[in-house]
Length: 284
Ligand code: NDP
Image 1: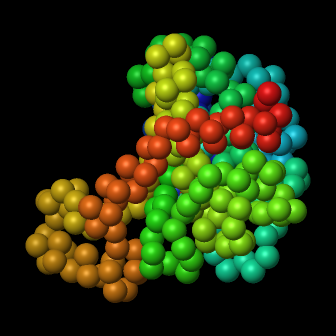
Image 2 (image 1 turned 90 degrees about the vertical axis):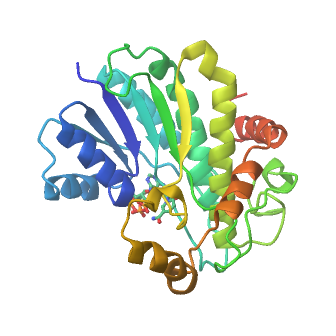
């Protein structure tokens, strides 16, 4: 049996393109874990993903029941699991009011963090049992992170505070924000991404040594002045940072990026977040 990778949110964007590239390599069987089966199937066909190289399976991260059902379906498929890519996300920067998952959690954190949190936990055993012969070397679990504290976007920085909103269920009765504050859609997305990164750090600390699984978070964005562009043409290197600063407004300096990474390394908060999340998705 070929090594298997599960990619959530593989019906568009980064997830779809990652699924396509892995499927085209011929080395992997790709499980496209998507909430819209028809959209995913159509997208796969449009990109010419070879028949038999992928399977679309239903997963709605905004429902814990759906996550559990997906895991059951996956286990029933008899496939090995070599890699899990937690890629799906919702981003609601213009929402004035919070919306909620089937279980009553604010939608961004409920989907991007809690849905993936349960999924990863339920699939750990399968990852652990992956045979050693996969192209990635070792079983791995990757979560797609993002910018966490851009001050020049619509809303404020990510800030989990003391997690008081999470502790009361994130259901809007007290607060729909993790820090207990007023609802802010852009911030909720950023908060969910910080949760993703803290969760990976906890997973690494809890399970890397005993299972050999590699846990990592990945930010696909762009720090315009890093060494990454050192081989690019001079004009690009000159123009790209001001372009990011003034046109896209997505500019992040190396220093700022370093600070954000350091902020995402708060192990105490990561631990607290872990135990509250366990409670909310009934893992305790
Ligand atoms: P897309 O919107 O193209 O992809 C998001 C995917 O998530 C879609 O397939 C969507 O499904 C899926 N999804 C949303 N809600 C659910 C749900 N409840 N259950 C299952 N799947 C769901 O965005 P990107 O490809 O840009 O984003 C992919 C990742 O990259 C995200 O984690 C994002 O935070 C991250 N990222 C992106 C950046 C960028 O510049 N684009 C920068 C930094 C990080 P559907 O097709 O049904 O809507």
